[in-house]
Image (cartoon, rainbow, N blue to C red):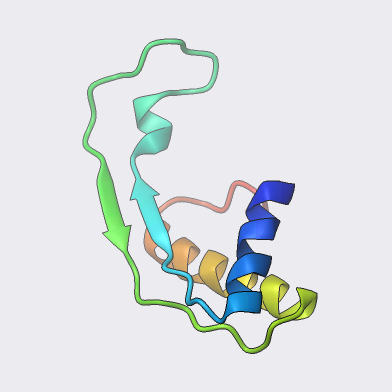
Length: 82
């Protein structure tokens, strides 16, 4: 989790936009408790770049949240964190 947050912080500090990528079908591919993947369709949706609003920790958190919102709108699955 920390490595992910550090990626958003690095993007915010450098002014680099983040590109949200949505993976659809991964939960069907490898279900919980299984060791072998199942044959299924996967989709990779590449979103528009999300620009940072600053270069500090708060900007990194806002960038993370914006990317997450974008991914959730395209995911077609319930939010597992909710």
